Image (cartoon, rainbow, N blue to C red; front, side):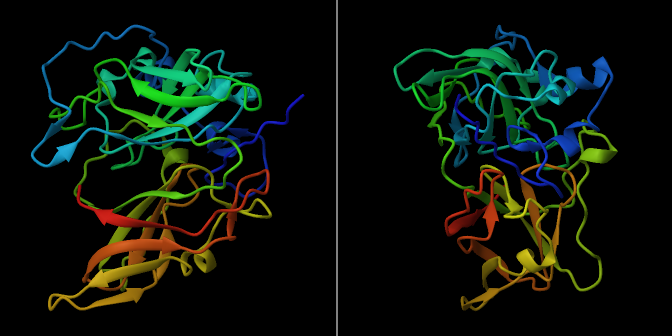
Length: 312
């Protein structure tokens, strides 16, 4: 039997994980059907009305940025708290170029194709636990997507109408190659954090990440990882690891320099987001992180990773 490779964005112990999400977070997720209905879908048909929206408009494009094969046939029992009967299936976090309108989400919006061309069986799609303001761009797909050794998942495609949160773009037709189990986690996205973004109220207290300190912080950059980011001993990244982030910023006169965060935030919620708290108002240009610091539970350490900072 092949031992599953699990990607874990966060967590203080090497616990059993739900794909890219810690069970310590999943255990405290919504327990009422009304809340689960807001963040998770088992609907296998696309019920969203075709509004005739484009894939691209005003310089923005609806794209899938990443699909990370997180768990192979071994989602634990606690996955049932995210999606009923999700235990024992595959898990795959996917990341979008914009936030998603949760009211247009159906599990049937997604199609996973294996290396041999077989279409996987979709069971559920859920935002949990990445439900803070600005985080509704990561979804956990649950289903039977292939075998890691004999016929791994190769591609994810949006086959239904799935709209951006502002109602201007349709992700239908977007696709991306799947990252297999073996590689370590990488940075996928960085953007300037906007405190004005409204919280949709889809999460609960245990899925709310920590905030930047008020004193001395002039702005923050949100970074999104494709998969898990724990330390090699399984503990959660902290301020020491936050100082390893390097942020290139540009002053008004065009000169650039590298700064490090004065604090690391959006911790303790089990999702794949970090906030880099900065003490400068200069424009962030890019973010990098060194190799060999963060690891998934199978001890696959991260490669050196960098990403440009994008505008929302």
